[in-house]
Length: 363
Image 1 (cartoon, helix red, strand yellow):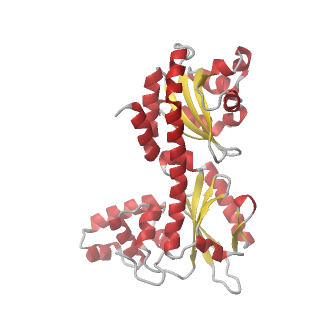
Image 2 (cartoon, one colour):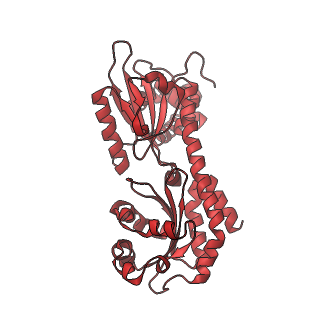
Image 3 (tube, one colour):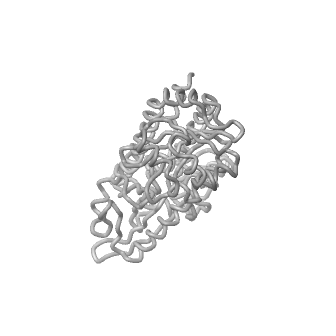
């Protein structure tokens, strides 16, 4: 498979972007390659060659992305074209550039070549390659090689972004199939996608200005805002369940926040969490379609989750399924990992309300 094929393969299987970065580095003799998404007022998202991953994490947390003029300079001079740092900045500017002085020079990789693409949503997609101090600035041959690939790189990156948005819509529509309100929120708390049942929650839950989700229950809204802030910094639990008080004509709800954590897909989706609203008291065997689609469970894992939510013990589930107890425990560990909980009681609470509406759950 040639390089261009590998690039388009990564477009539909985002987990392969890191490997594609290594192949791009080999093309130009670069030490590393990274693909970065820059969104205003949010930390950068990225995927990179493994050799630079630790330094990319420092870059993500440092705030350097907002302080460096490189992306906007490149976008203004030649959008979508690969250029070297020496092509867009003077020696004097390079000497005081925060990216170079605070990050690149200390790790011995002071030279950069990159291209900036403006994504339709307003995000910037940046391809960045680094070269060591010993190798010096990238040569014109390396720039020409990357520019020969730029159209394919841009198409592949935009395809990944569109597929990520499609996946967000698919997740909430899966919930709509069984009557559950759901939405996907982005890094800034904006609603990326929502399903039709969400409209039935108004005015208790509504989408307001700038596509922000607002909860009429002041206490729940404060908890929700705090949870989003924690998610943006990566300090929140894998799953959070927040109570929404009952009103005179509506029962209490539980809002489940499930972080979107799918490796390289994060750099394109700008999704922070999937929100699922379930009514209190609607405890029952969860819908197989929701379990498989929402938590990426296999059918046997979903069946185990169903039986546990019915109140059966692990031993009873093993008897029902005709499996060994240890096999069921293995499935349960996988379910815990995928749902973000670590106790059976938490799992039952999380899955409460994901029951089929008005019919039998398909087997």
